Amino acid sequence: MVAIDFSDHSTEIISRSVEIAKAFKAKIFLVHVADPNPFFIGSELEPQMFQIQREEELDRKRNELQAIAKVVSEKDVEIENQLLMGVPVTSILDKAEEIAAFMIIIGKESHGFFYRTFMGSTSEGVVSRSNCPVLVIPRVDEE
Image 1 (cartoon, rainbow, N blue to C red):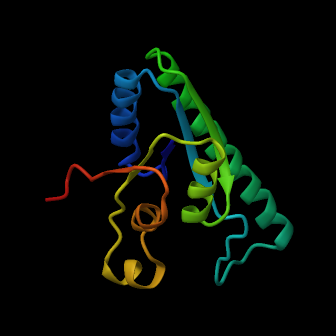
Image 2: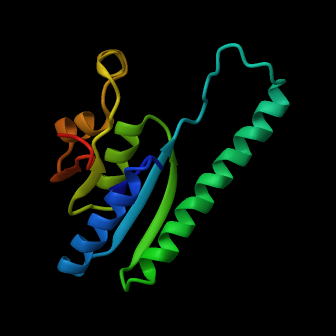
């Protein structure tokens, strides 16, 4: 199972995942987790307009997942994708258990100290709570 956040780092995560899937003749299950109820402080949008924009955003993410899946399948790797809704760590782990994932591949976020202190790190949460192996792909620009 491969979890991405659509950051610039996602391209590297997908590339490495394809290499691994080919080596093991494995299928990729690609996921992205979206917050089901995002809260924006100071939003000027009416609730109905906010909902419309939210649905458009989710559609864009589904389309991005489909586009990635198309590119990966052209490399002779079987792939399935799903947009999950919920808390990232919990959603990733629940889906991994549901599909009996052999491994979870995830990227290392580049959030700063304060973000990690107060919000936590998705990759660290997945590593610490997973029942299957987790491969964390570091950012290329990290030292």
